[in-house]
Each structure stands twice: as C-alpha cells, then as structure tokens.
Amino acid sequence: MGGEGSMMAANQSLKNNRGMMRRKNRSPISLVTTSQEQFTDHKQATPEQLAKIRERLQADRRERNRSILLLTGLFFLIAGGFLIYFLS
Image (tube, rainbow, N blue to C red; front, side):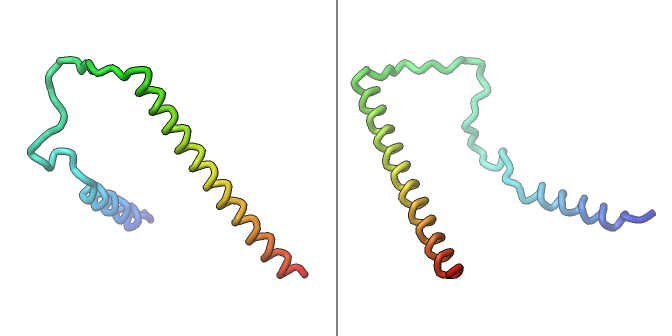
C-alpha cells in the first residue's frame, strides 16, 4: 500500500512537536491549589477609583485609535503616491 512513509513522517512530526511543548508540571512549585475552598475577594473599589480607572482606559483607547488612524492614513497616502507615480 502506498503512503506508509508519509504517514510515518507525520506521526514522527507529531511526536516531536508534542515533546517540544512546554510541560505544565515541570516546576516543583504549583500555583494551582487542590483545596475545595472558594476564592473570595474582600477588596472593593471605591467609586472614585472606578472613575479614575475608567478615565485612564478611555484615554488609552483614544490614543490607540488616534495612532491607528494616523498609521492607516499614512499607509493610504504612500499607496496613493505609488499608484500615481506608476500609473502616470
């Protein structure tokens, strides 16, 4: 039957890839607990802290949108310049 060599190569590749993957249990210290206790977060943010966080996130979003718009406009200007140069 044909194809045995390619299937063997595929299986070997999968085996090698599996061996290169990072193992979860390599470190002796585990960050995962096995206890059944539920996590409770007792810290509550004040409305002033929430307002500051909201303002900071909105400012970051405005800055990111502005830079994306600038880069997109710059790309289209360069692409338009190339089109005008090569088509005329």
